[in-house]
Structures are given as C-alpha cells and as structure tokens.
Amino acid sequence: MKQFKFYEVDIEEIEPRIIALDYGNYLVTADIVRSLLIKIKKDWPEQKVALLSTAEAISNLDKVAHVLEDLKASEFICAGAILVRNRLQADIAQAFVKIPTAGEYPQKIFVDKDEALCWLREKLAA
View 1 (cartoon, one colour):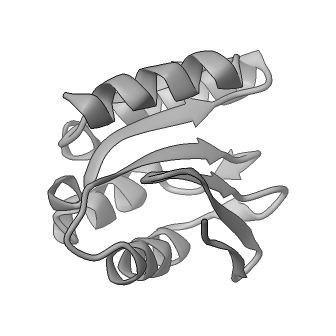
View 2 (spheres, one colour):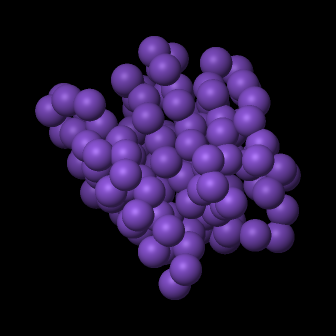
C-alpha cells in the first residue's frame, strides 16, 4: 500500500483503491487539489479510486469544484467520502457537495470513519 506526504497532505492507500487524504491544518485550495488529483491519477493509473478526505478548512469552494470538473475527476474517482469532526465542517462540506460541478461522482459526508469506509467499499464494488 502506498503512503506519502504531498505538500502538507498525508496520502495513504488504506485499502486497495481507497485513498485517505488528510490535509491536517493545511488550507485546502484549488491549486493543492489540482496537484493532488494529478498525482493520484498518475500513481493509480488505469483504475478508479475512492477518496476519504479530512480537512480543517477549505478556500473558495467554487474554484475547488471547478478543478474536479476541469480534470475530469469522475474518470478516475468513483466516490468521495468527506470526514468531518464538527458542525462547521459539516456545513462547509454540505455546501461543497451541492455545487453541481463538484458532484460528478457520488460524495457523502460522514462523522464516523468506519461508516465512510463501508460506503466507499460499496461504491468501488458497484
């Protein structure tokens, strides 16, 4: 299983084709997301992956959503689970998944990591 740090983001393949992205306290920006997605597409070629994302803060939801659209993320990502720790993160995540360009693949918000992983496994198996 692959595990590395890219910028300040911890990336770990926690199960085959399930990739955890932990941004820690690092601000999620469109540029970082673009670089991460290019890296993921390169490191997991010819296969769809599922993402489990954890972040404290994100800047400019629309720009991040447009990165997903520009890079045709739905061609190599089958699902995205967003793990939140508090109500503010849940509200921000909810606003993000409602952006039409961000919804090219199924995305769901979770407070429990095990539930998120179960959902991601189902999406990979579909």
